[in-house]
Length: 429
RNA sequence: GUGGGAGUAGCUCAGCUGGUUAGAGCACUAGAUUGUGGUUCUAGGGGUCGGGGGUUCGAAUCCCCUCUCUCACCCCA
Image 1 (tube, chains in turn blue, red):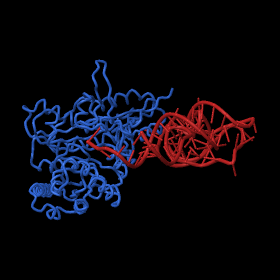
Image 2 (tube, rainbow, N blue to C red):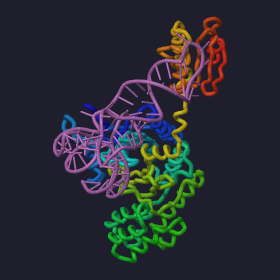
Image 3 (cartoon, helix red, strand yellow):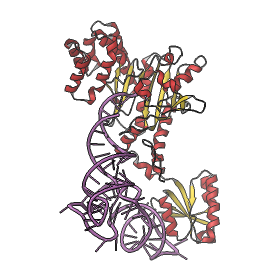
Image 4 (cartoon, rainbow, N blue to C red):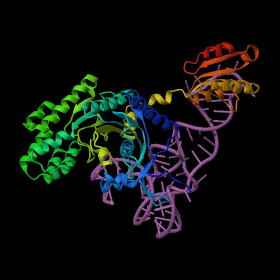
């Protein structure tokens, strides 16, 4: 009976694990240097925690199950509810602002496609307790910091930024009814993916008034913050939202990352809990789904039974990012990296114990080293050393038997030197 | 949930107007090579041709069903 891997899951062979760790290490390193502290929660929670703020469609895409005690549970599809739960539990004792990050493994029972699997990793960073859009700027900075650290430039990726608050204010100002606004969001969110003609048709289905429709079409053509002012007129809410965006871009400029950032009124982000600044990271070709996204969600903690405290955050999965890194060849250096520092070869079977002793010493000193079980021809052992990507090879031969000398061969250059064994260990110390 | 594409060796694929024992490259193992690796040469292992049924003297090849993977739509927390 041949067992297949489950749909939408991945096996991480060593070469895949190296890539996964490359990404995970970057996430962690960048988070820490940006002042975020790591947290994690359980991989399953009560089902109702995820149903609370999600529609039926999203609830149907959960891996849900009943435990032996009859509890309805679900494997986590995101970690934000857990974050809200954890923060709420200690809200009175946690020093503000709270800057936390996590890199959870998540599961969603969606149909897999390019850049979307059923099990994946997602980097999350959140700042809780800061109203100022400086926090949003810092989140964006941290996201860009990560992209740069991993090897991507402003020629590869772009952060498209908008504001839910702005969109809500302008739509209301245009006279769009509150109850119809969600439907409009859904249409606007698709704009960049579909032809203009299709977009106009879809808009027609949600807004019957041609004048209002035209206003929205004009608004969606806006490419800079300056152009927005004309739309806002004297509306205070809209003007305030524009001011906030201007302030945000001011911060981004001071932080030195404007080359990565672009205002884009078309960024809406699903029907999620976003209330203010929203943004998404895209591969410049725009052939892929978003690499990551985030924004401000000021009601989340309150929705999960806590106080009304503002929050802003960002999430990035490993699937799309992995595709981008593969396309740009940024994983290539991983296969060239040495896994082993010293491979110890021996020219005579009688020296096997010596090589074992030497390897043990090296390992105790924290040096990655290995040797051949089989021994045999030196050529075989050198071949083995190459196969395991060893940086250097120590050869135990007549030099050792007669003069206690080690031959050290650099595998990249092929050059070798002969050193006294004491000098070798002295050099390591 | 809806629609397209594809399943032949570990991987990429050829073979498909039915016809001996199903092939190539890469990868793997061994040898050439018991003191010098990545190259080269030689040999070897590895397949219920996704599965089931049908047509036929004969099916990887034709027909039906089914499973799996993949891409897109829906959705995207």
